[in-house]
Image 1 (cartoon, helix red, strand yellow):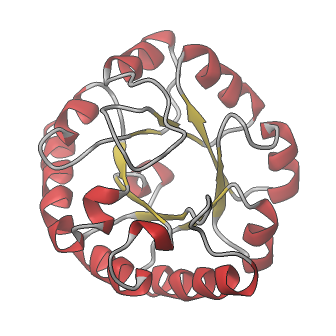
Image 2 (cartoon, one colour; image 1 turned 90 degrees about the vertical axis):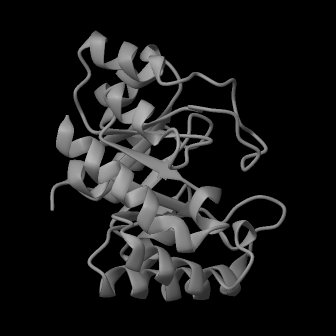
Length: 213
């Protein structure tokens, strides 16, 4: 599976996003059609130290069983320790070039909120872009101003053609808008972490829309 294909349904989750054990949530999500997973264990409610590492390994094992890439948010050292498939960083994290040197040829995703950030991310070595927020969301406390699917159109119009996913407030009723704008997939947190039993519905929406594109 190519990176572009792996990004079709991208599940982002930490223990604080779940109402039951994260491993149970992830397993149900993987069975429902998730194609990539990002371990995002950060913030005041996030696990630290050995507990964080132990959970990361447990979730990584599930991803490997299902042949799904396991990405670590921000924590480059943890990603290297675990031999994760890749790292995702935001604009306030380590410089992109520095992270690229550390992780070698592993997957590197970068959050981008406008054309300028997207262009710089590509020039600095990003493999894919996470673009948003697409819609209002309460999941992330540090969420920026809602950009909407039009920002994806702007990035594509500029000529940036590396894989990208929309993120922020996406669910099965609005995912098609993000894909129509030019995204290769959607990244979701609460739409799956709170309702893992609905993963298959979201997966079907994504697959049907991409097949028609």
